[in-house]
Image (cartoon, rainbow, N blue to C red; front, side, top):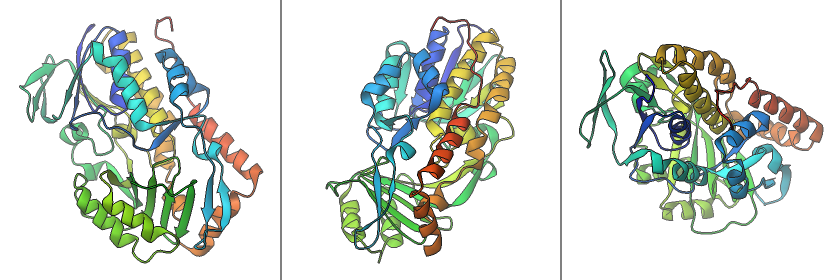
Length: 383
């Protein structure tokens, strides 16, 4: 199945990264994205260690990522009076290379759009495997048949739901939510404030305003900004420091994203001619590995398809053998209790940790070990 027709669902990071490699290996690629256009801005994402650098270099975008990097910035953890309790070092939160998600998505889109069909504002409604391919219907576009379909559409993957079953069977809620909000005012240098089970950060690496809070499962529309703002207003009512000012700015914001911290667990990354990539297969939990896993996974998946001469069964099995051990950090991580500790004593313990550089150094070495925990193959190309 050389020069296969391949449909990718999702145009954030994993999808365009995979499109880059599939195009280089000679496939005809279509990317469908539910959003009406590329999503600008968004939180900062990061890359860590030699493995991530190697993949970015082989893609030919390492220098571009470096040119767009935000640079790690120290963040002060403050009390209700604004006094500094601890400092969260920029190198701890920002990895080796930190870049805005929207900037990375735009870079990948610009590199692939000339040789790839992007369809925005549409979504897959059914996937039916036949002897020779996958028959796909869409909300708006006419039905088509593709050789292969890739679900690179995030932790709430539509492709995974259609092929693998309901989300509740594959996504485990971890007891916390997070929100990223664009603000119309500047709250100065990066600062974080905690009360038990709740965290607010402004001016930091993730977004103009970043929230993490403990909660039972919530019922709200992820595509309705007003409902998301109502959730945040209820949760953060009565909180100290400058949180009332922040919440006033949240109410005026036109950009808000609220989602759960959850883990994805699937028995296999593929079924037939359909395969999952990135958060759809090994969803991350704000532990700082999601983007690296997506980009490395795209490289491995496309490379194994090339190595197998297009035999998707062999390729998908080889992809899973490599990525499942590497993605184990996504199955074990949960940043919720770390960012929003549940008691005053746990907040103090978390803050204490940042006063001791030796402990931070050990944690960063462990992070680097996870990030480099895969032996990258070469797939017959000159990089």
